[in-house]
Length: 212
Length: 212
Image (cartoon, rainbow over all chains, first blue to last red; front, side):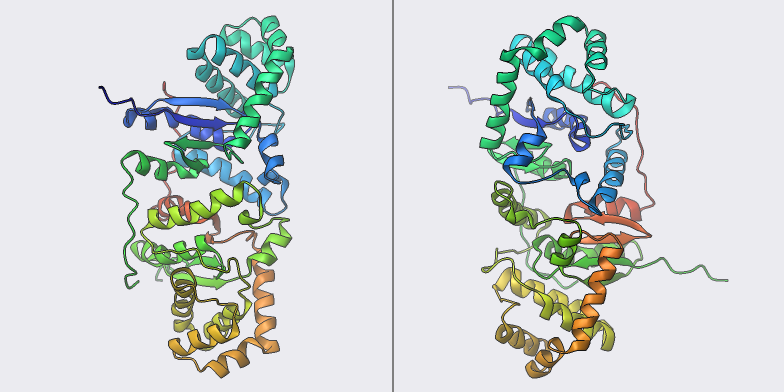
């Protein structure tokens, strides 16, 4: 019997999350280096925040200024172009509904749609929450604007995204980006090195206390 | 004229913070590799949390279970022995007051005291909030237990720590560990690689979007 293929890396992201955007730029290459694929999963951070009684880091005094700077620094550290969009953050359910419609109908196009939207928002200031801008973005991607709007307005697309967000909470996803690898959970763009170590076979060794 | 020496790295920590403990095990070696010294600064996370309207990550549903696991995994990743203490978290003002008393009276002994306490709490389950246990820990370190208690009970030591915590908030310290390097702020054990890159001269380069 052939060995079963290694499982895909689940990559949960929100279209309005700068750290999700940064991670979206490295996750495919990291997975490929270890013979893995990536299962992209668009979610709504607001739903996860509510379940975990959290707020956005930029909604907290003091932490807000740090976080806005850290978004930009972390993008530079990862070598990823980034400009803080205005408005930020935004509602992302329409872009996410299109994502899941593609994931169900034309799966190979869903991750490219996600990258198209994330790059548009975080480098070209395209407001994904604005229906007219999102329709233009869909058209750029080869989806008719009217069809896109019909999809994101449909009860089926709304129900699909609600179900995905419930799944996220059920799987312990309280933030984004969030990765699940072989059942192991990793939260945050800054868990990249730990994920890489995990995929290498996990040499998470503990040494004794040495003299400093 | 000789060039002025490179500035010290400010290392803000709380004695009940696992990520602070992990960082305390690598910060000196990292600084030394780049010709820097470390200015250790004991603070009270509770004061910073209140100012930033935050709670401990383990006080949030869903996030709690992840965080408890991540403490342990991040310690293994850094090669640092770690056992979740019980009780956790604890009040750390007495250990912190001893720290600042040493920092003012015998500065060279303050960081070793911090390491002594952090290792005791996170590997030997010594409860730093228990006066009898903290007195024994002081005696192990060479401080008379009665003197230690007199120090942490004194109005001067209480005022000193209050002033330090006010300073922390004034400097934007909303969590721990928190590092300030040449005025640049880094929050979290997971900013280690960014700090190292900063000390190397900061090749935080942005590339163009490549094809994934």
